[in-house]
View 1 (cartoon, helix red, strand yellow):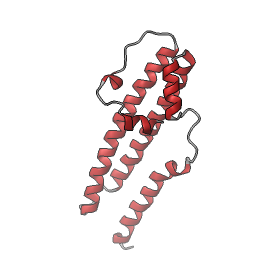
View 2 (spheres, helix red, strand yellow):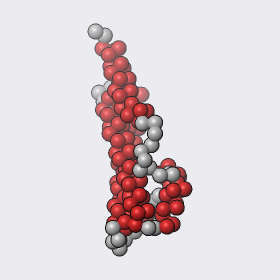
View 3 (cartoon, helix red, strand yellow):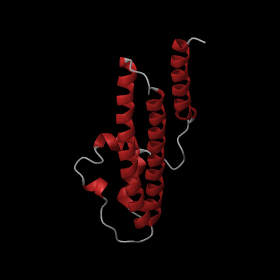
View 4 (spheres, one colour):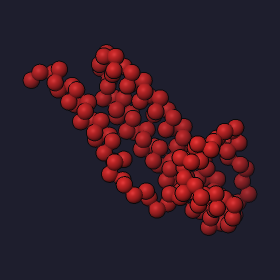
Amino acid sequence: MNTSFVRPFGVAVLTALALAPGLAAQNPPSSRLSTAQVTQLISRGDPQDHARLSAHFNALAEQDAADAKRHTAMQQAYAGSDKIVAVSMRGHCKELVSRSQQSAASLRELSAYHRNLAGGATVETPRAVEQPGVPADAELARLG
């Protein structure tokens, strides 16, 4: 069989499989909240509100972790090719993996923070919130 046909076909199949879970999930999980809901829960600050915020940020962290796995698979699909497009896509996927992993870590930290507040603990503000611009308005819009 002609390998010049098999390799691009394999990349296309791997890419489609990597993207399929995201395309299949048409309805967001019930733990995901809108920006308005997040703002409202933060302003009220009741223990049950913090529990909902914890679940929300955990769901977003899981989504980012899944994104990192998909981009890792796509990066590997382009391995072994020295074509300009493949080299470019490997770099692109590597950057997306890094960003998704960083985002997931920050979101898990926020989830733990709200979980602790829900349990009545006095906790320090997480590093993800203390950093200037994290989460920025654009990030809050994405989270909502």
